[in-house]
Structures are given as C-alpha cells and as structure tokens.
Image (cartoon, rainbow, N blue to C red; front, side):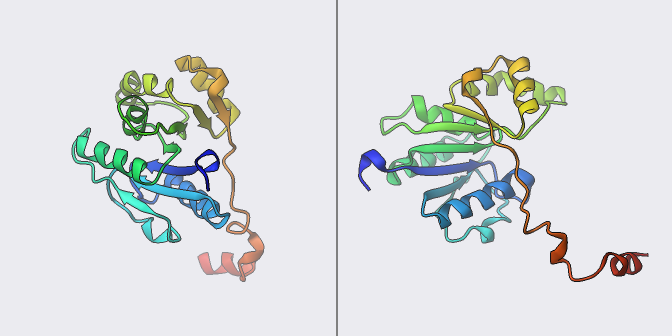
Length: 195
C-alpha cells in the first residue's frame, strides 16, 4: 500500500482481562483482521486472559507500572512509529492518558485518536473527580463513540463535549452465540436438570 491509502489501526486497552468492553474489542479486532485490515492491539498491563482469543494479531503489552508510566508511553510511541499506526481506538477512558499525548508530544506521524466510551454514568465521587483529567483529553479526540443515543446525549449534556465529534455505534449482539437453536437440549430438559 502507498502512504496515501495505508490505514493501520491500533486498539488500545487498559488490560486484556475478560470484560465486556475488552471482549467486544477482541471480537471486533478479529473480524477486521479477517477482512484484511491492518489491526494491532496494545494494552497497558496485565491481566491478559483474552490474549489467546486474538487470531494472530500483532499485540504489545506496554508494561505500565504506577499511575502513569513514561516507559509505557515511550513504548507506545515507538510502536506507533514502527508500525505506521494511523488511528488509535481506546477502550474506555484511562488509555486516553497515553493516546492523546501522542498527538501533541511526538515528532513522528500523528495518529487520529478515537475514544470509545462504554460507561453510562460516573457513579462514585472518585470517578467524577477523574473527569477533570479525562475531559480535556476527550475534547482532543477526533471522534468519541458511544454505544447508544441516550448515553451520547447524557454525556454531551453533562460534560459539554463537542457534539459534531460524538457518534453512536450500537452495541451489537453476537446472534450465533446467543442462538437458542444452538442448544441441543430442549427447554423442558434444561428445567428438569436445573430443578
């Protein structure tokens, strides 16, 4: 591919631990790779229970230590350069602390940062206080993706985010995985076994 049509996407997560957002990202990354897209996965630290579920996708553990790790940031920056990453999609808010500075504090090509928000509300006072850090980072993202219109509207109202960059990609359901016909036992057999 030439530079003009080369797109290499990195999905950046806090961990590869079994969780809703992380599992969704792994399924998406595998699907994009099967479609021939250039996709990479980076995560700030373990656990990495989902690592075996990645189908041969280039993956890097940034080995973050402490609250913010300059070593992990440099490792991310070097990886972005080495693999000509053009876009970074973050899973949740904390990885923005590493992705957004790449836009402002580096010499190489500047990737676009896309934030994926999977939290509907900041319930604890601790989480709300962290928004003083995350809000300026969110406002510097190319796009902010929400899983539902209500979630997007609530965040726009609460945090005055740029509406023109707030998008909705509905959370999908894997129809094959949840297909009732895929279960060989009848409903009655299952009820008897569970009673």
